[in-house]
Amino acid sequence: MSNKNKYSYVGITLVILVFGIIFIPKIVDRISNKDVSREESRSTTLKPNEERDASSDLAYLVINGERKRVPEFKFINQYRDTITNEDYLGKVYVVEFFFTTCPTICPRMNQNLVQIQNTFQSREDFGIASFTITPHIDTPEVLKDYAQRYGITHPNWHLMTGDQETIYKLANEGFNLYTAEDKSVEGGFEHSGNFALIDKEGYIRSRYDKSGNPLIFYNGIVSEAEGVDDDGISQEITILKEDITKLLQEK
Image (tube, rainbow, N blue to C red; front, side):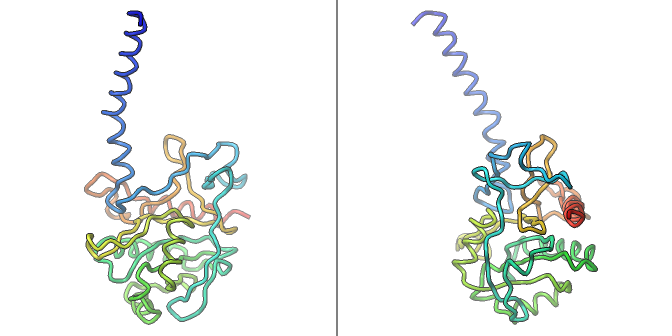
């Protein structure tokens, strides 16, 4: 190998090493946030000319060249009514996965959702879908009591329970929001603290971040009152409200 090629090889190796030292920890830190201990999907196949709707500046989640749509689901809500994905067609809604005995992030998430509910209380074309990840505990009666304690009053806010395996598949594959049973963590279960935003046609939507990448999910843990948490993570409830308004205005 010539001296020139040797120097080129050393230079390339140095660049790779520097990238690994500087950037990889930042990427891992971004993925491994306190609200979830596993990687949540962030689409890398979004194309600028394909994900925007003509009537708004919000993105679609595009996977393998197709816009991600909410899969079919069928569960029982807090009133023992059967609720399916079709009940949400024609409505803009927010999705979360939670459980009523959650000792950590769920109370904060649902307090934030109550604020969002109150902002759109009069809108019949708005809703919230809350899926419990502990259906063996969260019966319709338990969910109804939980709703009363938190001030959940919007008629289109359904707290749903059903088969656990089906719910976990819906979370992890349907919405790309991590959910799992883990006896080593507080509460015995871990799940994403993010919200998904769904448009009237059932597509997952979001805004773009400052770098031009789709946000995809909205942090549901940090409140508007906090602004920024102890780890420097900014609240996204305000922008979620703004984006709900945008989707409500879409035809």
